[in-house]
Length: 408
Image (cartoon, rainbow, N blue to C red; front, side, top):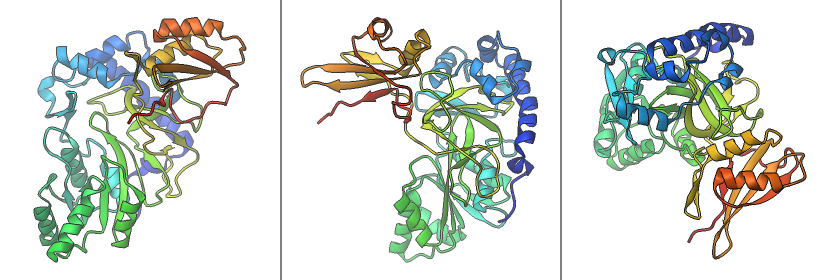
């Protein structure tokens, strides 16, 4: 398939900024007016003042724990949906539990852009092995298949022999599911002597796509691309055949921030993925995914001009128990707020054979540690050794808490 999903994918930098200056304040105003959770959280924010990505740093970060707590007292979505409960068509549950909404509108979760980039369209049959049980993944991809005009086989996960036989009988051309399950289906098909050669595309998510798995698909003539999404936000970023990073979806804004804070990292550094969606029905503003990634410079060779991220780099929730006490990224952020002259901090946890030990490395031009030692005791509730480092000395890997203890 050639061409782009729509004109949004190839906007100039100036046009993208101009469009954002219209869409972003409108979404902030929508969230404040129609979602009680945001009416409280953004009470002091003027929507008209939020016109570019950098302005979002002035807004609070919303975490899954915030949503979960709000949902316990304000069902079903904690006051963060912009629709009345009677207008919500689907509700899903993810582990936690935490609940998400869904609607049946055209490409509501925005995965159609990903399938189009893969080459899926009219005449294709997509075997959707994502779960339809509790979680929204199955419906997300079914909605996308409809958006690109293909036919969906709503298989769900499991029953591999039936999956293989159905793929052969239906002439399935595209697999949708976790990266490794297609390999299981193909192996079962080989064992049964089935012809699965019509499968030439794979849209994968929900797990790591290891190079050897992708190469195995390539060897069978299958193009395999991955996307990044969450149950709350829907589609966030996706690969194209250029396979040069993940291009951010046109319906979201992505920031990379220091874990535990809302502060952007320096260009190219690893940090937590924070997403603002432009979906008017469920306007999550600065939603912290808990995932680590980094912004890639430049644009994709495929011609799409939106920002790219490097893909999954680990989890931002680095909470670690030390001497019976949890140390959390939010505490490290509070330490930095006390000392604006400190550029970056990293807490290293180790064990000396008898006890846990704590070392805090701080990037600063200061040469005295005394003031920092007392702040660390107050904020982390633990004593720690302090090492002062020159700016740029700490690694740019997104870790603010590094647990270096070796367990058997």
